[in-house]
Length: 256
Image 1 (tube, rainbow, N blue to C red):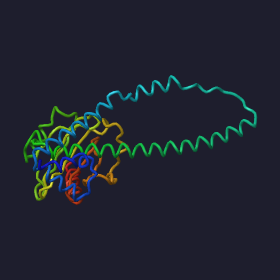
Image 2: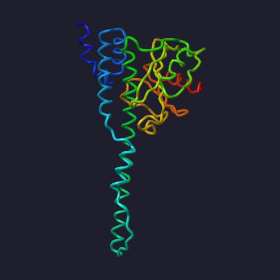
Image 3: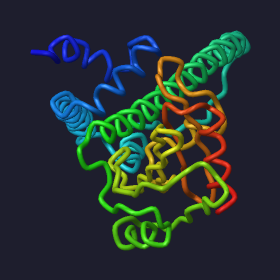
Image 4: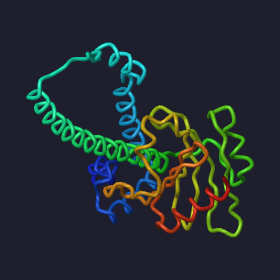
């Protein structure tokens, strides 16, 4: 088969582990090959299904709080001799060291969640490129695309005016991040596809971990930017230049 050599690298491509130039070549092939695009879409959907299944039984914050309250011991007032105070002081220093370790681990956890989010966003973008029907509402008119989302997502957002810009609106569709529904808009600029995702920030698992204007993971084969405004979290991702990504982001920020 002509595509066997391509399909042998499909998983590596979907994981973003190919060299940058090879990623771009693969992008072009997937967009033009119905067989590879269908295979890529199926693998991305399977990957997301497995990830969602793994989160199905995650305990809620309220459940964790109740358990912690039940096992927490009540402090008792006692008087201790001097030698025990010295021991207590040593324990304080040990606790400080443990706290530092906890903060470091929490920081690492925030970084891991951020990388997870950008990986999910990249998967959604790749799945769109691989799909034969990338959008559910096809229109270059923002006044047609925006009303389509009413009743489908629990928030409203504005789309930018594109006059005197090189961007063109392709359409929109639904998207899910951390099992949270959101909007997915697709724009074209000089034969490059750019995805814009909008989610309700408080519905994400750990929104504070994402942060604004910080660099995306180094192994991500796309340029990205993200910011929060009015309780909504925006992501812009694509293989266009970083200048184009930031320009489209600026248009969105001005519209909101």
